[in-house]
Image (tube, rainbow, N blue to C red; front, top):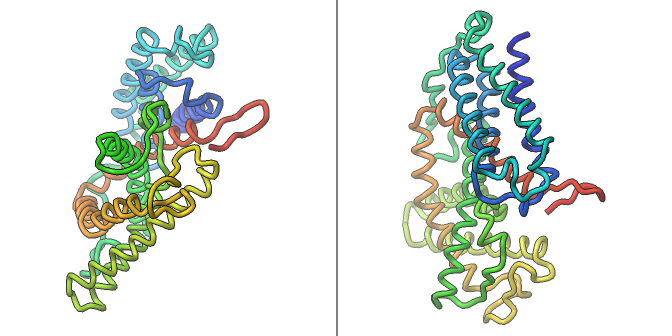
Length: 342
Protein backbone atom coordinates (compact mmCIF):
# COMPACT_ATOMS: atom_id res chain seq x y z
CA UNK A 1 0.00 0.00 0.00
CA UNK A 2 2.83 2.38 0.87
CA UNK A 3 4.52 2.11 -2.51
CA UNK A 4 1.22 2.94 -4.18
CA UNK A 5 1.21 6.16 -2.18
CA UNK A 6 4.65 6.92 -3.63
CA UNK A 7 3.31 6.18 -7.09
CA UNK A 8 0.37 8.50 -6.45
CA UNK A 9 2.70 11.25 -5.20
CA UNK A 10 5.06 11.12 -8.17
CA UNK A 11 2.17 10.78 -10.64
CA UNK A 12 0.31 13.75 -9.15
CA UNK A 13 3.45 15.90 -9.31
CA UNK A 14 3.76 15.12 -13.01
CA UNK A 15 0.06 15.60 -13.75
CA UNK A 16 -0.16 18.86 -11.80
CA UNK A 17 2.87 20.26 -13.60
CA UNK A 18 1.56 19.20 -17.00
CA UNK A 19 -1.84 20.69 -16.15
CA UNK A 20 -0.14 24.02 -15.50
CA UNK A 21 1.46 23.71 -18.93
CA UNK A 22 -1.93 22.98 -20.50
CA UNK A 23 -3.62 26.05 -19.02
CA UNK A 24 -0.64 28.40 -19.31
CA UNK A 25 0.99 29.85 -22.38
CA UNK A 26 4.62 30.43 -23.19
CA UNK A 27 4.20 34.12 -22.38
CA UNK A 28 3.26 33.19 -18.80
CA UNK A 29 6.76 31.86 -18.16
CA UNK A 30 9.98 33.77 -17.95
CA UNK A 31 13.20 31.80 -18.15
CA UNK A 32 13.78 31.90 -14.42
CA UNK A 33 13.74 29.70 -11.34
CA UNK A 34 10.04 28.88 -11.77
CA UNK A 35 10.59 27.15 -15.08
CA UNK A 36 13.70 25.40 -13.75
CA UNK A 37 11.69 24.13 -10.76
CA UNK A 38 8.87 22.77 -12.93
CA UNK A 39 11.28 21.00 -15.27
CA UNK A 40 13.16 19.55 -12.30
CA UNK A 41 9.91 18.36 -10.67
CA UNK A 42 8.89 16.56 -13.87
CA UNK A 43 12.31 14.95 -14.25
CA UNK A 44 12.56 13.87 -10.60
CA UNK A 45 9.01 12.53 -10.42
CA UNK A 46 9.48 10.56 -13.66
CA UNK A 47 12.64 8.93 -12.32
CA UNK A 48 10.86 8.25 -9.03
CA UNK A 49 8.07 6.37 -10.81
CA UNK A 50 10.64 4.35 -12.74
CA UNK A 51 12.52 3.43 -9.54
CA UNK A 52 9.27 2.32 -7.87
CA UNK A 53 8.46 0.18 -10.92
CA UNK A 54 11.93 -1.37 -10.81
CA UNK A 55 11.69 -1.87 -7.02
CA UNK A 56 15.14 -0.33 -6.84
CA UNK A 57 17.09 -0.42 -3.58
CA UNK A 58 18.15 3.19 -4.13
CA UNK A 59 14.54 4.41 -3.97
CA UNK A 60 14.62 5.52 -0.29
CA UNK A 61 17.82 7.51 -0.74
CA UNK A 62 16.61 8.97 -4.02
CA UNK A 63 13.28 9.96 -2.47
CA UNK A 64 14.89 11.78 0.45
CA UNK A 65 17.52 13.60 -1.62
CA UNK A 66 15.19 14.48 -4.49
CA UNK A 67 12.47 15.58 -2.08
CA UNK A 68 14.93 17.92 -0.37
CA UNK A 69 15.94 19.31 -3.75
CA UNK A 70 12.31 19.94 -4.75
CA UNK A 71 11.60 21.67 -1.44
CA UNK A 72 14.71 23.82 -1.82
CA UNK A 73 13.71 24.85 -5.35
CA UNK A 74 10.19 25.61 -4.13
CA UNK A 75 11.52 27.80 -1.31
CA UNK A 76 13.82 29.67 -3.70
CA UNK A 77 10.98 30.11 -6.17
CA UNK A 78 8.65 31.51 -3.52
CA UNK A 79 11.37 33.83 -2.28
CA UNK A 80 12.95 35.24 -5.43
CA UNK A 81 11.06 33.73 -8.35
CA UNK A 82 7.66 34.34 -9.89
CA UNK A 83 5.89 31.44 -8.23
CA UNK A 84 4.11 33.86 -5.85
CA UNK A 85 3.91 37.56 -6.48
CA UNK A 86 5.03 37.34 -10.11
CA UNK A 87 3.34 38.78 -13.15
CA UNK A 88 1.41 35.70 -14.29
CA UNK A 89 -2.14 35.45 -12.96
CA UNK A 90 -1.80 31.67 -13.09
CA UNK A 91 1.03 31.65 -10.60
CA UNK A 92 0.13 34.19 -7.95
CA UNK A 93 -2.27 34.66 -5.07
CA UNK A 94 -3.55 32.61 -2.13
CA UNK A 95 -4.42 29.61 -4.31
CA UNK A 96 -0.84 29.28 -5.48
CA UNK A 97 0.46 29.63 -1.93
CA UNK A 98 -1.99 27.00 -0.71
CA UNK A 99 -0.91 24.69 -3.51
CA UNK A 100 2.73 25.21 -2.56
CA UNK A 101 1.93 24.29 1.06
CA UNK A 102 0.10 21.13 0.00
CA UNK A 103 2.99 20.18 -2.26
CA UNK A 104 5.52 20.77 0.52
CA UNK A 105 3.52 18.73 3.03
CA UNK A 106 3.11 15.83 0.59
CA UNK A 107 6.82 15.92 -0.22
CA UNK A 108 7.80 15.82 3.45
CA UNK A 109 5.41 12.91 4.02
CA UNK A 110 6.92 11.03 1.06
CA UNK A 111 10.44 11.66 2.36
CA UNK A 112 9.58 10.42 5.85
CA UNK A 113 7.88 7.31 4.55
CA UNK A 114 10.77 6.34 2.29
CA UNK A 115 13.33 7.12 4.99
CA UNK A 116 11.72 5.15 7.84
CA UNK A 117 9.47 2.49 6.30
CA UNK A 118 10.64 -1.08 6.82
CA UNK A 119 8.20 -2.18 4.09
CA UNK A 120 10.09 -0.18 1.47
CA UNK A 121 13.38 -1.80 2.40
CA UNK A 122 11.74 -5.22 2.28
CA UNK A 123 10.19 -4.72 -1.14
CA UNK A 124 12.76 -2.50 -2.85
CA UNK A 125 15.80 -4.73 -2.93
CA UNK A 126 16.85 -4.69 -6.57
CA UNK A 127 20.38 -3.41 -7.05
CA UNK A 128 20.74 -1.45 -10.26
CA UNK A 129 24.09 -2.13 -11.84
CA UNK A 130 25.32 -1.24 -15.28
CA UNK A 131 22.27 -2.76 -16.88
CA UNK A 132 22.15 -5.40 -19.58
CA UNK A 133 24.81 -5.18 -22.24
CA UNK A 134 23.82 -4.13 -25.75
CA UNK A 135 24.21 -6.98 -28.17
CA UNK A 136 26.73 -6.62 -30.99
CA UNK A 137 25.57 -8.98 -33.75
CA UNK A 138 28.29 -7.99 -36.18
CA UNK A 139 29.95 -5.15 -38.00
CA UNK A 140 26.81 -3.87 -39.72
CA UNK A 141 26.71 -0.72 -37.66
CA UNK A 142 25.06 0.68 -34.60
CA UNK A 143 21.58 0.89 -36.11
CA UNK A 144 21.34 -2.88 -36.41
CA UNK A 145 22.01 -3.58 -32.74
CA UNK A 146 18.82 -5.08 -31.37
CA UNK A 147 16.40 -3.10 -33.58
CA UNK A 148 13.08 -2.23 -31.91
CA UNK A 149 14.47 -3.20 -28.52
CA UNK A 150 14.25 -0.99 -25.42
CA UNK A 151 17.77 0.32 -25.98
CA UNK A 152 16.95 1.20 -29.59
CA UNK A 153 13.76 3.11 -28.73
CA UNK A 154 15.41 4.78 -25.74
CA UNK A 155 18.33 6.06 -27.80
CA UNK A 156 15.95 7.21 -30.54
CA UNK A 157 14.02 9.24 -27.95
CA UNK A 158 17.24 10.86 -26.75
CA UNK A 159 18.23 11.73 -30.31
CA UNK A 160 14.81 13.25 -31.05
CA UNK A 161 14.49 15.36 -27.90
CA UNK A 162 18.08 16.59 -27.99
CA UNK A 163 17.88 17.42 -31.70
CA UNK A 164 14.74 19.53 -31.32
CA UNK A 165 16.55 21.75 -28.80
CA UNK A 166 19.98 21.74 -30.43
CA UNK A 167 18.29 22.43 -33.77
CA UNK A 168 16.63 25.50 -32.26
CA UNK A 169 19.99 26.81 -31.08
CA UNK A 170 21.43 26.00 -34.50
CA UNK A 171 18.71 28.16 -36.08
CA UNK A 172 19.80 31.01 -33.83
CA UNK A 173 23.40 30.60 -34.99
CA UNK A 174 22.27 30.48 -38.62
CA UNK A 175 20.30 33.71 -38.17
CA UNK A 176 23.37 35.38 -36.69
CA UNK A 177 25.32 34.34 -39.78
CA UNK A 178 22.62 36.08 -41.83
CA UNK A 179 23.02 39.15 -39.64
CA UNK A 180 26.77 39.06 -40.31
CA UNK A 181 26.20 38.73 -44.05
CA UNK A 182 27.56 35.21 -44.44
CA UNK A 183 24.22 33.97 -45.84
CA UNK A 184 21.36 35.69 -47.62
CA UNK A 185 18.01 36.10 -45.93
CA UNK A 186 16.06 38.11 -43.39
CA UNK A 187 15.73 37.98 -39.63
CA UNK A 188 13.35 39.35 -37.02
CA UNK A 189 14.66 40.02 -33.52
CA UNK A 190 11.09 40.40 -32.23
CA UNK A 191 10.34 36.74 -33.00
CA UNK A 192 9.96 35.35 -29.47
CA UNK A 193 9.76 31.72 -30.56
CA UNK A 194 13.32 31.90 -31.88
CA UNK A 195 15.12 34.48 -29.77
CA UNK A 196 13.35 34.41 -26.38
CA UNK A 197 11.95 30.90 -25.88
CA UNK A 198 15.29 29.06 -25.87
CA UNK A 199 13.72 25.74 -24.87
CA UNK A 200 11.08 25.81 -27.62
CA UNK A 201 11.41 22.41 -29.36
CA UNK A 202 11.75 22.39 -33.15
CA UNK A 203 10.06 19.12 -34.24
CA UNK A 204 11.45 19.28 -37.79
CA UNK A 205 15.00 18.95 -36.48
CA UNK A 206 13.96 16.03 -34.26
CA UNK A 207 12.28 14.28 -37.19
CA UNK A 208 15.41 14.86 -39.26
CA UNK A 209 17.55 13.22 -36.56
CA UNK A 210 15.23 10.20 -36.43
CA UNK A 211 15.38 9.86 -40.22
CA UNK A 212 19.17 9.99 -40.06
CA UNK A 213 19.11 7.01 -37.67
CA UNK A 214 16.40 4.83 -39.20
CA UNK A 215 16.87 5.58 -42.93
CA UNK A 216 19.93 7.60 -43.92
CA UNK A 217 22.50 5.75 -41.82
CA UNK A 218 21.35 2.27 -42.93
CA UNK A 219 21.27 3.60 -46.51
CA UNK A 220 24.83 4.86 -46.14
CA UNK A 221 25.88 1.39 -44.92
CA UNK A 222 24.09 -0.24 -47.84
CA UNK A 223 25.73 2.14 -50.34
CA UNK A 224 29.14 1.38 -48.86
CA UNK A 225 28.52 -2.30 -49.61
CA UNK A 226 27.24 -1.58 -53.11
CA UNK A 227 30.29 0.53 -53.92
CA UNK A 228 32.58 -1.98 -52.20
CA UNK A 229 33.82 0.49 -49.61
CA UNK A 230 34.83 3.22 -52.08
CA UNK A 231 34.50 6.52 -50.24
CA UNK A 232 33.80 9.03 -53.04
CA UNK A 233 30.78 7.40 -54.76
CA UNK A 234 29.32 6.39 -51.39
CA UNK A 235 29.64 9.93 -50.05
CA UNK A 236 28.27 11.57 -53.21
CA UNK A 237 25.17 9.39 -53.48
CA UNK A 238 24.59 9.56 -49.72
CA UNK A 239 24.81 13.36 -49.84
CA UNK A 240 22.34 13.62 -52.75
CA UNK A 241 19.81 11.41 -50.96
CA UNK A 242 20.31 13.39 -47.75
CA UNK A 243 19.77 16.62 -49.67
CA UNK A 244 16.47 15.33 -51.05
CA UNK A 245 15.37 14.28 -47.56
CA UNK A 246 16.27 17.69 -46.07
CA UNK A 247 14.37 19.51 -48.81
CA UNK A 248 11.32 17.28 -48.26
CA UNK A 249 11.33 17.82 -44.49
CA UNK A 250 11.82 21.59 -44.81
CA UNK A 251 9.09 21.90 -47.44
CA UNK A 252 6.65 19.75 -45.45
CA UNK A 253 7.26 21.85 -42.33
CA UNK A 254 6.65 25.00 -44.40
CA UNK A 255 3.37 23.74 -45.82
CA UNK A 256 2.13 22.64 -42.39
CA UNK A 257 3.32 25.52 -40.18
CA UNK A 258 4.25 28.38 -42.52
CA UNK A 259 1.41 28.52 -45.01
CA UNK A 260 1.08 32.29 -44.57
CA UNK A 261 4.85 32.85 -44.45
CA UNK A 262 4.59 33.97 -40.83
CA UNK A 263 7.76 32.13 -39.80
CA UNK A 264 9.98 32.49 -42.88
CA UNK A 265 9.71 33.75 -46.44
CA UNK A 266 12.27 32.87 -49.10
CA UNK A 267 10.38 34.25 -52.11
CA UNK A 268 12.92 37.05 -52.60
CA UNK A 269 15.92 34.69 -52.59
CA UNK A 270 17.29 32.93 -55.69
CA UNK A 271 16.65 29.22 -56.21
CA UNK A 272 13.62 29.07 -53.91
CA UNK A 273 10.55 26.88 -54.33
CA UNK A 274 7.21 28.43 -53.35
CA UNK A 275 9.07 30.57 -50.82
CA UNK A 276 9.20 27.61 -48.42
CA UNK A 277 12.62 26.18 -49.27
CA UNK A 278 15.73 27.68 -50.81
CA UNK A 279 18.83 26.01 -52.21
CA UNK A 280 21.18 27.85 -49.85
CA UNK A 281 19.47 26.51 -46.73
CA UNK A 282 19.00 23.03 -48.17
CA UNK A 283 22.73 22.77 -48.83
CA UNK A 284 23.54 23.87 -45.27
CA UNK A 285 21.08 21.38 -43.79
CA UNK A 286 22.44 18.62 -46.05
CA UNK A 287 26.03 19.23 -44.94
CA UNK A 288 24.96 19.08 -41.29
CA UNK A 289 22.88 15.93 -41.84
CA UNK A 290 25.75 14.26 -43.71
CA UNK A 291 28.06 15.05 -40.79
CA UNK A 292 25.49 13.52 -38.44
CA UNK A 293 25.14 10.34 -40.53
CA UNK A 294 28.85 9.81 -41.15
CA UNK A 295 30.46 11.09 -37.95
CA UNK A 296 28.22 12.26 -35.09
CA UNK A 297 25.64 9.49 -34.92
CA UNK A 298 28.16 6.58 -35.02
CA UNK A 299 30.21 8.31 -32.32
CA UNK A 300 27.24 9.02 -30.02
CA UNK A 301 25.80 5.54 -30.60
CA UNK A 302 29.15 4.01 -29.63
CA UNK A 303 29.21 6.06 -26.42
CA UNK A 304 25.67 5.00 -25.52
CA UNK A 305 26.52 1.39 -26.27
CA UNK A 306 29.59 1.37 -24.03
CA UNK A 307 28.11 3.50 -21.24
CA UNK A 308 26.37 2.47 -18.04
CA UNK A 309 22.97 1.40 -19.37
CA UNK A 310 21.17 2.05 -16.08
CA UNK A 311 22.55 5.58 -15.90
CA UNK A 312 21.47 6.18 -19.49
CA UNK A 313 18.00 4.82 -18.64
CA UNK A 314 17.74 7.29 -15.75
CA UNK A 315 18.88 10.13 -18.00
CA UNK A 316 16.30 9.21 -20.62
CA UNK A 317 13.45 8.95 -18.10
CA UNK A 318 14.35 12.37 -16.62
CA UNK A 319 14.69 13.89 -20.09
CA UNK A 320 11.35 12.45 -21.20
CA UNK A 321 9.56 13.87 -18.15
CA UNK A 322 10.97 17.38 -18.56
CA UNK A 323 10.74 17.39 -22.35
CA UNK A 324 7.07 16.38 -22.32
CA UNK A 325 6.33 19.44 -20.17
CA UNK A 326 7.98 21.63 -22.82
CA UNK A 327 5.87 20.01 -25.53
CA UNK A 328 2.71 20.60 -23.51
CA UNK A 329 3.66 24.18 -22.65
CA UNK A 330 4.51 25.27 -26.18
CA UNK A 331 2.16 23.21 -28.34
CA UNK A 332 -0.98 22.46 -26.28
CA UNK A 333 -3.18 25.03 -24.56
CA UNK A 334 -6.64 24.59 -23.05
CA UNK A 335 -8.82 27.68 -23.54
CA UNK A 336 -12.55 28.34 -23.01
CA UNK A 337 -12.96 27.53 -26.70
CA UNK A 338 -11.27 24.16 -26.31
CA UNK A 339 -7.85 22.63 -26.95
CA UNK A 340 -5.52 24.75 -29.07
CA UNK A 341 -2.67 22.94 -30.81
CA UNK A 342 0.41 24.84 -31.90
